[in-house]
Amino acid sequence: MTKNELIFTVYEKLKIQSDDTNLSEELVSSLLDTKRALLLKQQYSAKPWHLPREVKQELCMTLKLVDSVNGYKCAGKMLQTHHALPSSIKIKGKEGPILVRKEDNNVVAINVVSTERIPFLFANKFTAMLTYAAVDYDGKLVLISADNKHKFLTQVKVTDVFEAPELAMEYECKQTNPNADVWDLEYPMEVAMVDTIINMVVQDLSRTLQIPTDEQNNAADDTQRQAVQPRRR
Image (cartoon, rainbow, N blue to C red):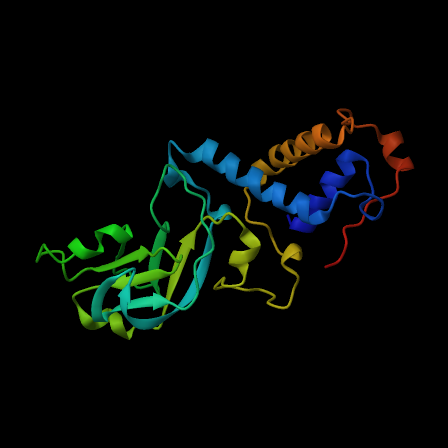
């Protein structure tokens, strides 16, 4: 389901028309993102490894060589993404992305750690040669290792659950239609969540705007209402 379709459904349940209301589509879009994040935290905080594939996004991020990150220097041994990662949904207080892989999907692990652990990564000679990843204070992903092989990486794939899916879509690895409006692309949400999230948004807006909600499926009433078409962005 697309963001445009979700917004249309919210307007329809509120019995208002998009061209004749102060309720902006941007506000509805923001509420949909907020309720999605809330629901994901509620349902998967106890078992974050059960997060459905539909809610995850895989981003391809390009890398550059840097000498220091957040005051920690490691000349010639650190890579950093050119752009900051979109904010992710922190489920069960997790640190950093869910998964970081090499561009070719190589099974060699990239271990995600907190930035604060960087100065201590090479104290153990048995783990110093591993490749580590951390998200710095600017939101950029940093790769570091005592093994120089990681320096030849030009791109990594980052899989996570992001607060604002539209922002993440700019960096998605698989873009079926890069010229399409982001609200016309599939919204990363489990099908079973659709009705729950829409109802949560409708209830919030109904209380704010003092609009009575329609709890019944009244076909006769529906035929009298003009269909609300979402604005094309």
